[in-house]
Length: 270
Image 1 (cartoon, one colour):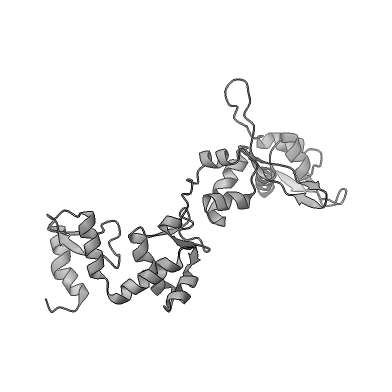
Image 2 (cartoon, one colour; image 1 turned 120 degrees about the vertical axis):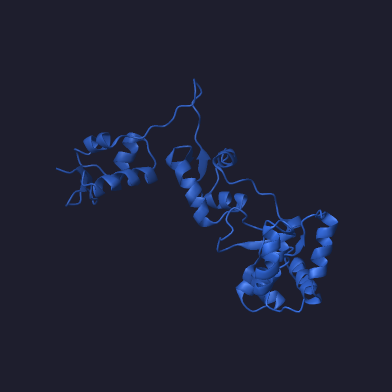
């Protein structure tokens, strides 16, 4: 057509024709893909046509970049590693030219699919990418029938640190996951792990209820340390500190001015 300005083409031709339903995207799910092409709306997009369009859109440089990236990513690679290997300058450029087109085609997968923006994200060819379980309460509890460390959970579900704690903490707070005790065998310390809490055998599942603020305040009429509160109400450390710190913030509990047995204790305020 002899028009070099892309915005002019979009404004005058492609956008109006798409609004009229006369044109459609080859890849409607990723409208800004580098491999995006327009097609007559009446033409059916078959797998063969899609592959042909992809190949026609690629230059020799694109093909070489694709071959290099796929070969290099037979094992998980970070964006920085891919950048250095293919010789592109800048993370945005390597993501746009080398990685995203292959993700759009399903040839490369994210190693941490549940957390796309994870800072330790890596990329691997689809054939080498293990099928990770969905990161949800049900699958976590099933996996933790056997005691697991947080690192084991993180690696099994392929999630980043932030998402790990965001999902795990509420499950721990509800008492559905509990910590095992740290033990020492010879010179080796076996650190505490997370395990699914035992379900009561009789009747229906009993939902664990948290103590009320009034119960904790009344308990702290006598100076108490965090451990005493936690033990008295059978709640985990995270939940205990969350409740107690809120009561301190609301000035319903206070810390003793003097240390008792080397610790400042909690006491009812006023």
